[in-house]
Image (cartoon, rainbow, N blue to C red; front, side, top):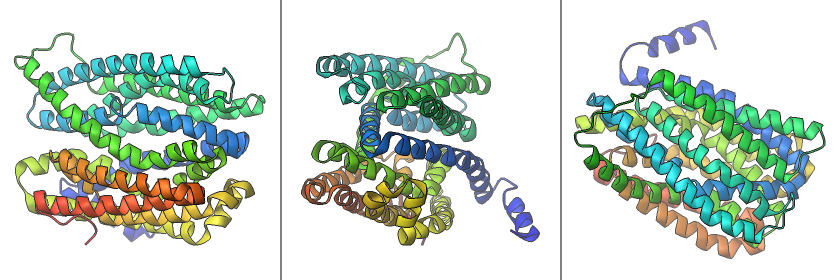
Length: 444
């Protein structure tokens, strides 16, 4: 990059304008993602090669189950606390933000205990107590549920305060680094198997919780006493909002995880591994949109409440274009040279089974980026019910297509189903954004 371009980039990032705020936020979170992505991929490569397709498929399937069980406790809580904190921070109600933090942590704890009791009882009954037994692994993985929830609440509070980098540091850096180091140590010691790989995952979640808690206390100290004249009213309001957020995130997460879950049920562990490897490539393509969504969430809430439709249109267009510029040079090599890339990185076994799933998911996620932050625009503006409708329609399409395609085509069929779901979801939500917000989402 020339010196002139660097100067222009620095100049764009200065000031208080919308583009400057987006650029500063995007660069901060983007830098964290740039640290996170190599760590996450190195850990995936190490686990994929060290466990082999069958063992890696078992590990990936259990992680998908844990992710699904954590939906109401982690991603739903994160979106809820981000939106509510942004609104409360704008109105200067810091006591209510502290009350929100306590309320969210309390409900995470209650929900985790219930999930561990119910699912854990089934796992104990079904477990064969082997390192490669899914029920044994699931039983160990359930201990991650409360920590995943607490981490999500902390990230949501900090994001709502526009401290996105601090909120994401533990999840994007500490957690994958710990997973990588522990898994590497296990491999060198000859002790790496699906169960110990899951224990490495738990180590990452635990350390992320410790570091994240310290960062939250330094950034937003919790008072011992909180004055809440309308506390019960807010409690009921947050609880009512939590339900649609849970349904929304459940549909969204299942859209992403349903391929692995259905493959684990209807196909082989090797096909689960192929899908997991392909999804890692798809995550690279959509990475820029993920960063954009983290940055613009609190801005959408503030701008929507101000009624400035032109500014909302601007943030939608600018963020989508920024995401596409980054996504294109990542997607094109995966689409045209996917087999060679897989062969070099993961090995010949994965190149044979994961090439077409990778190509299909890379194209699908590129389409996702072109449509922009349609879901985020609706959720952060208070129209999560509209976003939920699109997610449910897409999930239905994915499930129906998967039942027809997976038995014959395995991971390739699951990728096609997910691609259809991504397209349907974006088309439906784009119409919803235009209808309820009066703006055109996407790059145009």
